[in-house]
Length: 266
Image (tube, rainbow, N blue to C red):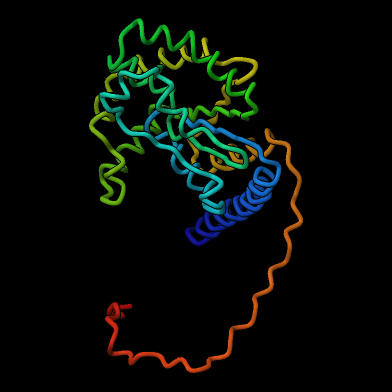
């Protein structure tokens, strides 16, 4: 029985890898289409901590050219940035023609963590709710394709992932002091998300919710949806022929002991 269960698990893993591979090939075609046609694409990823945003972003960017598909994950704003128009710190990262920009958290920080943790005033929060839809409509009118994804995870699954992060030294860096504080404010975050959706889930730039309790399904579903939202055609990539190496005429390689090599431990 144990062997049968193992085979089933392997089969599921192979199916996931196979489906992911298919989708990643399509992402390459999408990238070439965006680059060739000069499209401008913004993809916003939001959601609770440990909801699976980072893993999905990683699978999207793995096969893509980082010069075309860029990830923006801004840290805490500086004092200067705090004094600017709120959206100003995000504007420099918007895409030029032929670029895809993924925001790993975005201007929606104001409607989430800043709102719940008291990092903004009530007036700043209300102004955000008024101006955000207009800001996003401006982006669309300027020719930018804007997609917004909210990763939804249950409190039970989030707790499992938090515990995994705490116990695994390779994941511990993902757990921040803010995560500890957010644990006691689950309801506040839920209400903030509902209010945010009520004001910013617009016809021009709607929110798309990804059920992320099962990470692998969430990744596949999200990538598949992105591909369905941007009309593209498969590009006929020109074959690449490597030119022959030039003949070695008069070049003598220095002795090997003139260089310091990394010890071959493996």
